[in-house]
Length: 339
Image 1: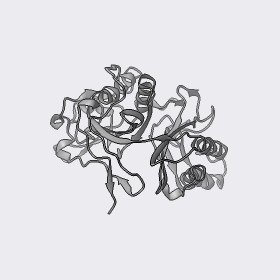
Image 2 (image 1 turned 180 degrees about the horizontal axis):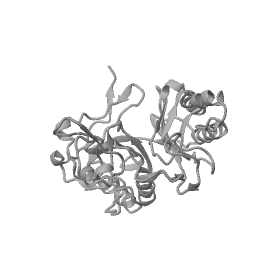
Image 3 (image 1 turned 120 degrees about the vertical axis):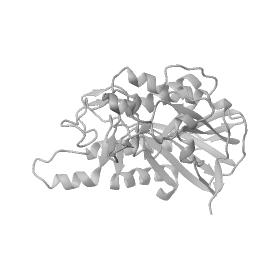
Image 4 (image 1 turned 30 degrees about the vertical axis):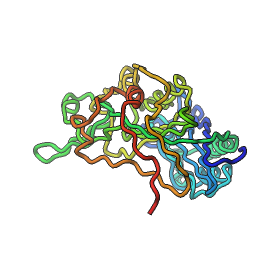
């Protein structure tokens, strides 16, 4: 990792795809072993550095990462980046066509006779080493400006639990074929996809996108895929030439069920099939900022502004068309002093 200037970013990517026969999300289906690899699963992230220190953000195309497995990722990434594990954040995008890794749960299962497998320790070991190697080999780029932007997202997400007039709760999951589930109100959602851009002048180097919804379109067939967010992310990176990372927000009660029947045809529509795209989201206002003394805070979106009927500007169908609209949207400060 090269010489140091005022504020630098080093993007990295590593393959974290399970092997055929490895375990996907434990307990989700009767047979959760990998049979088909449709797309590679990726660990994508950035190392951020200035004179005050080094921090790392990483997003895994996995469903879950828990306990000692999470600690192992942070420790190895920290060592590769030359920083402390406390300065490393590892997120999962939460696709259900991906591993759910918990080495502590596997140790408990190993005590039982003929217990199923939830985590393959050798796969975890190999995945963490590949990510650490990618971090160690990441190339620094100087950052002169940081910008943010947002775009309304339409007909993608909806509340999972809908209160009915009689007080009961309608549960609507990631895919819905029941007409009553499709007719039920959208409810409260994350109304906006938000983007942070690290730039050299007005040229984006890395873009990080944040949106809260369960990201799966269809699953349960022993297939590995990075699903809707991965399709949007990788196609956007190919079209724009800018390194792209997607972070799933807090989406426990948000899914795509209202607008998703769980068919292969639904998936590209949600990912975004139209690309009215110019160079990836150049914000219209910039800030020159230092990194370590600051903490990232998402702009507050009151519930009254998170319903589709209240959103402005004009909503856009799918992730990618939302990304493409960012040039016309508001810019807000990226970093706020802690305390």
